[in-house]
Structures are given as structure tokens and as C-alpha cells.
Image (tube, rainbow, N blue to C red):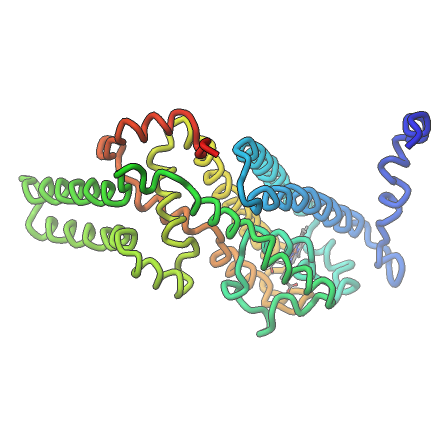
Length: 368
Ligand code: HEM
């Protein structure tokens, strides 16, 4: 392109295409009924959401692309962490923005709500794209009017969602990256065996402390031992691959056994320089998931305030449906499971010298 044209032809308003952007707020109340002042706010708040969704998708897709490469350039882990951080900053705005929406009262909303029927946020394609990229599986979704969530989309959109489910899934991409983590078995060091010994010692010590306690009653001791037994079943699942696989099959866990072991290693030994960025990445994924859930609760709360128990314009039960999605649409629950498996630093098995040295420098094998 000619340089001169590049520098002279762009102006603030045409660069940002403000002509299109600022003429895209058509109030239906004005078009087909009595103008309702707050409809402008309703449109703009939704449009701003959709713009931010666009940025989130842009960032998430770039991360999945990096992770889908056969070998990941380690510098990209840092880029992924900073882009996920950006996503969480946007999510905070999205949660905060609900307060602006709430300056509209239920009565003001009723001035134009009838004109919206049957449109609904349920039909936000970009929102579904975000959920699908983050890795929310179709089987986990609570059904809406007994139909798949994608029923409201046209064929091209459905196809795009299917393609993303198959190739654009961040959870899967991260799982595969975790599976490639070295050090799980390294020069005679078997991480899970060492970890198992440490957990067994820890549990034995805790049991002894309860039994030898002189203040607790026998009944109290029994109860505490029982509670310990319940929580130790979580440890059994990581010691036994077939148990883990059963939980994956039943949908209770998502990460493969190998990926789970890697996530555990990264969390336990995160103080090692080379594991620090991978640890940050896992933390950021939990953050993104957590802010999604917070938004869901916050939106459900706003809906309760705005509509009470009325059904939604999209035909759902409204607040009850939304609350249910907040409760059950967590995605990175496997990382919460890792928190259950944490043991105190003081109990951590020492790493053999060679492993320790490697972790201090290079994450990948530089021999090729
Ligand atoms: C007065 C404000 C709002 C009300 C009363 C409201 C109400 C509802 C209701 C009742 C639903 C359930 C589906 C249905 O039956 O229609 C829903 C879903 C949804 N709304 Fe809103 N909403 C409001 C504002 C917003 C805003 C500002 C956004 C931002 C984009 C939004 C995004 C969504 C999304 C993404 C869903 C689908 C959630 C899911 O299926 O998990 N809503 N909304």
C-alpha cells in the first residue's frame, strides 16, 4: 500500500467506523410503539457487552492456536498468561456494568419489554462461542425448554460452534499441553510414587495426632477419623488410574490422568522457576472460570430484581434457570480438585538433585 495514502486517509471517525457504530441504536419502542427512554440504555449496555465479547474471543482464540501447535514455544506461555489476565480484567468490567443496567427500574423496563419478545440474551452467539472455547461440554449444559442450546442459531452458526467444540477447545488444548509436561517420570524419579508416600505419611501423622489427643472425646475422635477417611478417597483417585478414568467417563472429571498428574506437580512445585509460568496459567484459567460464574450469579440477581419470578422473553423460567446455570456451568473444576490434593510444603518430597537442577533452567528438552 502507498505509504502516503496510509498516513493521510485515516481519521478518527472513519478509522473507528463511528458512522455505523453510532447509528446502530434503533429503539423498537420508538419504531412500533410509544418511545421508552430507557430502551437506549438497554441497547447500549448489550452492545458494549457484545464488543467486549468480541475482544475476549479474539484473545481466547489466539491462545488456543498457540496451544494447538505440536511444540509450544515457551515464550508463548507468558503471552497466554498476559492475554488471560486481560480477559479477566474485561470480565471484571462486565460484572461491574450490571450496576449501570440496574439504574433502570422494573417499571421503566416494562415500558418496552413487550417489544423485545421473543429476543433474549439466550440468543447471544458470541456468549456461546466463549463458553465453547473455554470448554463447556454440551452434556454438562442444563437443557433449556428440553432443546439443545444451539437450536436458536442458523446452520452456519451451528457449524461454527461444532468446529470450535472439535478444534477450538481451550480445556482440551491445555490438557494436551499438560500431558506433555516432562518430569512426571524422570531419570528414576517417579513423581506420583513419591507423592503417594508423602500423602500416606501425612495421613498417618494426622491420625496419630487425633488418637493421641487428650482433650477430644472418643466420639469426637471417631467423627474426625471418619471425616479424614472421606477426604482421603480423593487421594485414592489420583493413586489409581482406573478410578480416575471412571470419573472422567462419568463426567465428574475432565482432565486425563496424565494431565491431572502434571497439574498436580505444577501446583506442588510451583516455587521452582520453570514451573512458575505454567502455574500462573492454571491460576488464570481458574480466574476466568470464576469470573464467568460470578457474572452468571450477578446477572441472575439482576434478573430477579428486574423481573421477579416472571419467565424470560426467550421462554425460560428466568431467574431459576439462570441460577441453575451459575451452579452447574463451571468448567475448570478439575483445578479445584487439584486444591483438594494439595499437601503442605513441609510434607513435599524432595526432588532429586538432577530434577531440581533441570527445573531451575529449561522446561523443554533442548537436545534436539
Ligand atoms: C434488564 C436486563 C436483563 C434482563 C431482564 C435479562 C433477562 C434474561 C433472562 C430471563 C434470561 C434467560 C433466558 C430467557 O428466558 O430469556 C437471560 C439470559 C441471558 N442474558 Fe440476560 N437479561 C438482561 C440483561 C442482559 C445483558 C446486559 C446481557 C449482556 C450480554 C445479558 C446476557 C444474557 C445471556 C448471555 C443469557 C444466556 C445465559 C445462559 O443461557 O446461560 N442479559 N437474560
